Length: 88
Image (tube, rainbow, N blue to C red; front, side, top):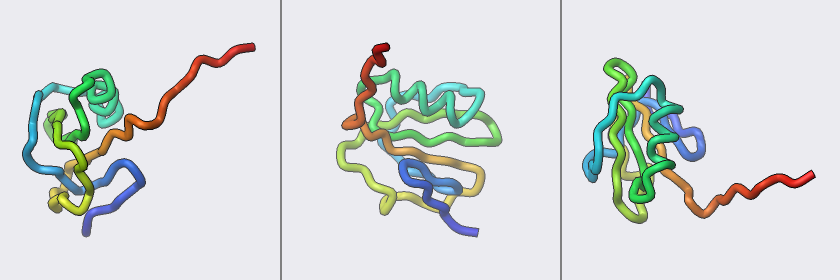
């Protein structure tokens, strides 16, 4: 097995260090939302087995810095994508 990259997130990988907060999270998606809700969070790591969510901060982080870690998922936030209100 190896790291599998899916655009903004990867499976079996960890972006080590740069922790700003550890949370208990019900899922990877909930962890992602916690990161989005924290203006200082640039990326995250989620441990599937114990549901730990690690919010992290390091400008210009990339998956080239990731380590193989079975049972972990990591994501990098792209805050340049903005949602706008939909109007009828």
